[in-house]
Length: 182
Ligand SMILES: CC(C)(COP(=O)(O)OP(=O)(O)OC[C@H]1O[C@@H](n2cnc3c(N)ncnc32)[C@H](O)[C@@H]1OP(=O)(O)O)[C@@H](O)C(=O)NCCC(=O)NCCS
Image (cartoon, rainbow, N blue to C red; front, side, top):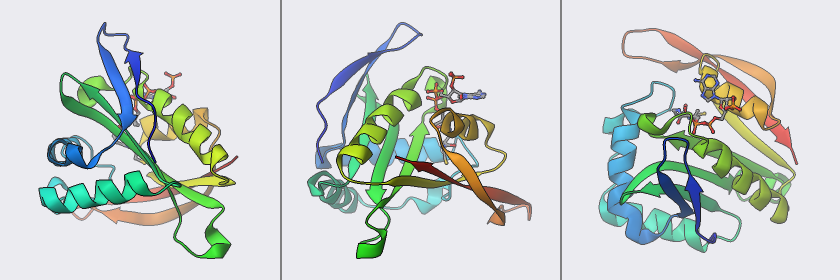
């Protein structure tokens, strides 16, 4: 689904644009993912595991843009993507059509500028307008920034999954399962 582009002034004096992702963003999206995934240990993939070609990524972005229940928002500044978020149905079975999954990431240089908050407000509005009844996500329990962001927007922890992630050094991280009713 498409969202009308809007500007978001940042506390650092710059202004970014929030808009929906398009197939033409494929190359910049791949560049974003590879850098962003290297900046955090809290996401499922390592940078090496994001191995889409530009054609594959463009197809993913096209399908998402053309699906009325999916919204993928990016923040753009100076021609670069600096944040990405999305909301999508939890599968296609009739009995789960009321549930949506939410994802969120921001480039480290732009943390604490209110970008995640601005995207979150759009995603929640989109979810309500599209008949979703609850938002769901999984977050590493020690990911203080993200857990606080989700608590601020009304998510509640309904469970903990021990050892949700295992790192190359053999250590583990637990995940919180979070939900927000709409
Ligand atoms: C988590 C993340 C998306 C937050 O993005 P952001 O744009 O910096 O967030 P915002 O500036 O909009 O802040 C929103 C809220 O997040 C929380 N937060 C953000 N930074 C924080 C920090 N350093 N310490 C504690 N809470 C923090 C606060 O609740 C904040 O609200 P407040 O400013 O009213 O206190 C960002 O840090 C990120 O991309 N991290 C890496 C990827 C990731 O972990 N994604 C989530 C996977 S589940």
